[in-house]
Image (cartoon, rainbow, N blue to C red):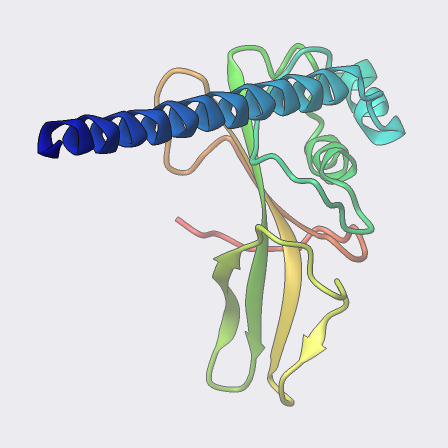
Length: 179
């Protein structure tokens, strides 16, 4: 009788393992189906009018950027167009170049002792507001598109193009000789 109880307990454990395995397979199948659906939605999404305008002017320029599911008043493609047009870039001059862009939160200081700016952090979540924040009489915080044009092969200092475009206003932030 003792042996029969052990077999019954072993069978119960095996049943639990099978149920657990089946449950995991169902969860995995649902996850894969959801990812396929979301991928298809992303692929079918129509490009924004700013992206269409950018692509019409600059053709198939290689742009590397994080994937943003939010957009400030000046979109990434609008900021790219502002920056590249400011120095006369076009589809031909951008051949063999890579354009890198990211949205950053930056601190600007303007006092008798120092003037300049520094990156506080890269923006990965949408803020409540893109408006400038005046911390005190000498310090302002702003959301800025950081745009760099560099040769596709290699890294050059200074890069052929370096631009900071305000994500609220579209103004290009002058940076002077950085290097």
